[in-house]
Image (tube, rainbow, N blue to C red):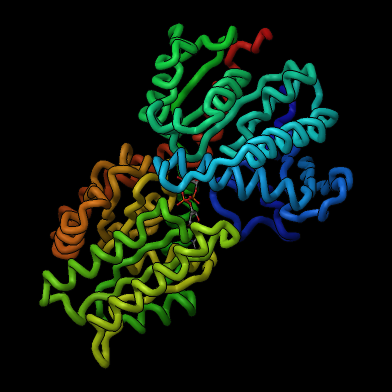
Length: 463
Ligand code: ADQ
């Protein structure tokens, strides 16, 4: 069996002493790398100004090589901030209104992918299997093939794939779709994303399905599949169980003073539906006077991508909104919303989820949403909380026993919060049991294993 080569925009290089703080995805991919030996390559997160970046820096840890490259300021501006995060991210989240097209940024995106390919290709041996992750690196296989690479190359998209009517508003949509045809296996989070992709191929007569999950397009045959990402369910449940002894979790519990906790955890991103969620919480409190003073909504939201204008604008918008609701509804001894802009360790996060009677996960659109799965995994089996989940998150296709809501329907979400808080114990336990069984069976290790098995079994590209 050949080595595994993983490529992603950023690389979670473990701190000395292990990956204790890392999320499930990083842990699972690292385990797969340890198993076969291999390389994890990506951007170091640093820039070299306008100078040509130094050669790749290598860090060897056991049988894994972490290979990192710097990028120039222009690369980061065009490839990362420009095309990846101001075109592909909004388009894939159905936000045509936020996409900012620029020829310079599009060219930069393809240029940096070529640069990645040139840095990576010399490291690859003939029987290595290459696994490319996410929207930053869609053209990477095409660039590697142009350099003569014949290896199996797979791609997994962590975010949604939009319908043709949305994707085709993007000037370079054809190059993006064509780029995917150079992979041997293209993986999506849900059947819905895969259907959207097939629809894009059909719409312009570019390609068609040839059976057994394979597509024919641009003279190539490749496989498409659905691989719903999971979490490290058993380990996360264990963190949550042990977290009651943690000082921060204990202080959080004491500070609630018997109030019911509603918890939301998201990166500060417009796709996560945070403003609609605050509106729904406000509506819930106004419509349910008996709950006034007896609930606390904790929203933990680390800032992200602050250098992208839409994200910067959102920071002040959400802070202002939370402040306004607290001003309008709060009393001298009750602050309805605790809004926190910071990251917390995974053990603490698990403990906070377990304190939550309601997990509010209401993205407007999400590839999967791991927070929904973490919330379920963290619950006390004897007295589980209720997940209120957007039907537009990939996770809703698996977690059907959550209270599914349309996050654009503020009143509907407010009603779901009220229903969650008054749900009888037996119903909570039944719903939770079905969900946790699903998450234990389909965890992140099985996701990783199944993708790699399918990639290894897929026929190699002939062109
Ligand atoms: P994200 O958009 O980042 O991921 P999500 O799936 O929810 O969204 O994952 C976020 C992760 O960050 C979770 O593991 C969560 O615990 C962690 N996190 C969030 N806020 C935190 C905080 N304050 N402190 C500590 N940790 C925090 C993208 C796609 C998703 C897809 C994933 C994985 O957008 O749809 O589920 O990739 O494929």
